[in-house]
Every structure is written in C-alpha cells, then in structure tokens.
Amino acid sequence: MRAATTSASTIRLTSNGAAAGSTSTINLPNSAAFELGCKPIVRNTSSGNALSPEAPRPRRWRSAAAERPAPTGYSTALAADTTNGGPAVSITAPGSGYHTLAHCLTTELQ
Image (cartoon, rainbow, N blue to C red; front, side, top):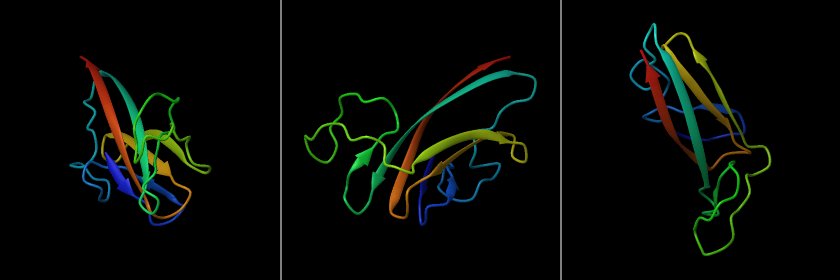
C-alpha cells in the first residue's frame, strides 16, 4: 500500500496510490477471522532521508548513517472501511514531499 503527501493532512494508503475503492484496498471476507499488521516506511523526497515510525533496528538508508527516528508530526492509523469492505490504512505526514509505503501482512481463519 502506498501514498504520496501533498500537505500535512491525513491521506489514505491504497494498492495503487489512487483513491480508495474495491480494487485498491485489502478485501476482507465475510464470516472469517482476519488479522492485519502493517509496517510503514517513509521517505522525504527533498532530503532523501528514509524514516520509520517503528522501533530502531539496523538499516542502511541513503548513507551509512545511524537509524533516523520518525519525523515529528507523522502518525499512522488503521480503521475499518465499511464502504469497500476492508481496512483503511492512513498516514499523516509533517508536510508535502513524503512518500509512504506500508508492508501489510494478513492472516485469515475461516
């Protein structure tokens, strides 16, 4: 799931970076137990710095510099999308020029 920010407002992540719809969200089946976990990573397109709101761990970004913390004003949210029948993964970035990618893992029990 991905999105690019143009302001500091909240934006929805989708499979194609476009508006949320039945073909661009993770569809949850009826009558099943379903678990979803998402790990977002953010890149500032101006500086090239990559940021992760998760706990620090060894990674190599633009250079061999140490892990960079999440930017101030960045947050993620997970809610139900009852219109399209799936989860709504949203981000709020500190401003424009951020690209966000979320690696989402799902488990289903029917």
